[in-house]
Image 1 (cartoon, helix red, strand yellow):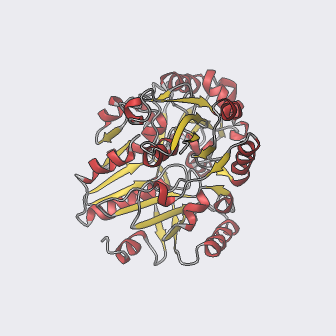
Image 2: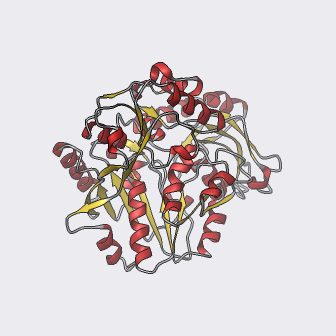
Image 3: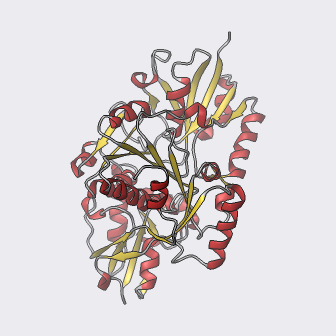
Length: 439
């Protein structure tokens, strides 16, 4: 039987997972290339032989997605697997059309082909878009389960932007672990909140190896989903978070709409700051596509440690990077609190940007006057630091989930934004966990 030649389109996450669980030891296929997009500087690498298995002694080269059509033709690919997330339906089908026109089949892999079974109960936290509020939801679930005497270990959707062999299995239990693995700002945003509360979180490249190690110290596994992707594991309970600030997105983005349909419980977050119309639109859409899901309404109240650095001040607002870029949000928690506390002005950082930060604004021109906390490598972290320090403002509002002061030397006063999940009404995370016998 002739092997089918496959190209996997990805962004250093779901693409590697699909390969590992389905293609790696599959004699019916030959993966001839990965392509990469969304994340800076991840193309030009090789998925290493140490992780690729016996069928790929030379590893698999990773190309920029812009080369896809030429790759299909020169490598004689039979099919292309689309394996990244947080994109509109039109985007996905445009890619499908490009692939089909180049002569290959286009494939979206489903749950049964890509989910791994755990020996421990799994609770998954998903979302329909980046920036809906998965992080505070995950933290609240860990708190509830821990207070009930359960040992919870979180596993995060992959962000392996460095040495893939070294990142095969990563365990984070201390701030020193973040430095040990040379984590990017995006990684720190996801791992640090768990560490700050005394938790353990895993991530990496090989998610079966990660799961088997995590199972050794866990009563319950928490899948802390990234972007709006499906869980990598078969789940006993799935929560999906939706955002009434972006009503309708829950119906139009891939694979967020899949995550919505898979949910046992749907959390309509940010009801304290969204419009009534946005909340009702989202609620109706949820009921239409997943009528059996429990609906939880929640607020994400925002506080800061030094409000005096906002009121009456000219502030630079630094928000979560992915939320502003491919998440397409026009504002975040830092903006909300700056307006609430009557900042004199939110300063536009664009005249002060340098190098890769300036390039980010060119790629995502709708970011506006906010500064995304981009930091996918050492140079970009330096560029972010320089941009902040060059900006003419009184103080800096840090709206990301991490303490940027740990990795940047900022030459102005800073105040950190904090937010937690606060459910409203009789349906809560606790009541749903209890109904599934997990509490």
